[in-house]
Length: 324
Image (tube, rainbow, N blue to C red):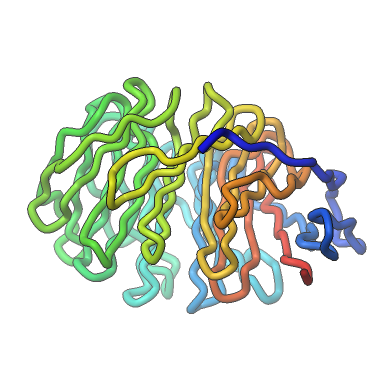
């Protein structure tokens, strides 16, 4: 399928909670609005949402903390000191555990989200970046950029149980518990590594675009979305065929990516302070939202369909879906 573009509809960047503007898709009413910009820690470079506890977590690279945000009150309820330079965060709702990948001291911080305390610090590979949790196996997968590897951490013992060689300079990592598979976006060789999480081995390597950074998986559709930063595009991968089926050009330097399967939408956080909105049915860009400064990360709550972005102006943007 050829790359697709669409008319872009802009939202002004806002730094208050006054009634927001909206962004619309042609032929519909509003599809999204910025409902709030919440001050968090310095340089929130990763975001994770826990729908069960109505909490969002930001990994704040600039001050070595995690901010916990109540999604109802839209206020920070705790600030937790973690390792040096956290750039990745993941949460396991069932066990009230969060993990941060700390790339300046090569560790992962294990957080009890009930007590708001770090319960363990686990040494991993060099320059850990992305982290994802498989709740079915109680394991965390950490992409080590300079080691070209993934560390697998047992969440009960807090020990590294395997180190898996992957492609060059892995950044993002995602887990599909239903297929017992993990995926890494390898920036320097333009590939995605496919990991069998039962055997802890790489089973396939998929060529994607130029400089892949983020990866998100839609398990039901057997599809992955990979942001290619240098290319300004998202690769759409059919996971059954293990090949790219579409390339969607979306904007300047896309980085973080998230997918909301129920509403057939994916989101890409771009360095030009824009959130690109992708219709996953048509594989086209359906709109874009101007958000905070230099946005790196995005997460979506699959129950409320609210989107959260971490912005380098030390804010978390809350983007509400509209009515189509």
